Every structure is written in C-alpha cells, then in structure tokens.
Picture 1 (cartoon, rainbow, N blue to C red):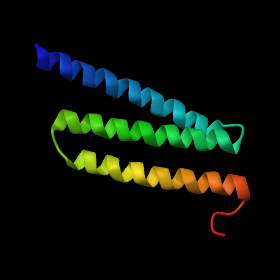
Picture 2 (spheres, helix red, strand yellow; picture 1 turned 180 degrees about the vertical axis):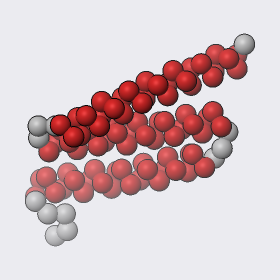
Picture 3 (cartoon, rainbow, N blue to C red; picture 1 turned 30 degrees about the horizontal axis):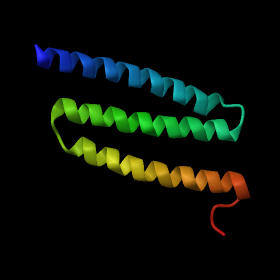
Picture 4 (cartoon, rainbow, N blue to C red; picture 1 turned 90 degrees about the vertical axis):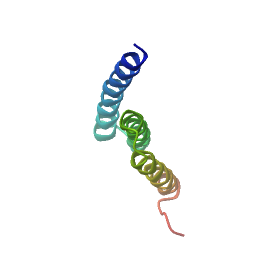
Length: 93
C-alpha cells in the first residue's frame, strides 16, 4: 500500500516537473528581455535537478544524485556569469 502511494507520488511529481520544464523552456526562448531568459534558465536547471533526484529515488541509484550535484554547481556558475555579463557587459575583467 505504502509503496503504491510512493510510486504514484513520484509519477505525479515527474509529470508536474516536466510541465514546469516546458514552461521554463518557453520563457527562456520567448522571454522579452535577457533577464527573463536567465530566469528561465535558472528555473530549467533547478527543475532538471529535481527530476534527476526523483529518478534517483525511484531507481535507488546514486549516479542520479551525483549528476544532480554537477548540474547544481554548473548552474550556479552559469547564473553568476550571466548576471555579471548583464551588469557589466563582460565576464572576465
């Protein structure tokens, strides 16, 4: 009984995260300003991290958790670089 509830909850979470990723992709591609596109990219990588964590919970494999950690680090660095580029027009001083 509890296993069925867990599997059902994970499936619903995967579907909702896929819809959120579609919305973030739309915002990233059609954003009227660069700031909207950066926000869409942030949302996209956070949703990708959460989706990988759900896959890891479902399969019981630690490889998904490591991949989520790599995406989190790369996403943070990308966000910082894009913010600096939007503020000053250059990334490396």
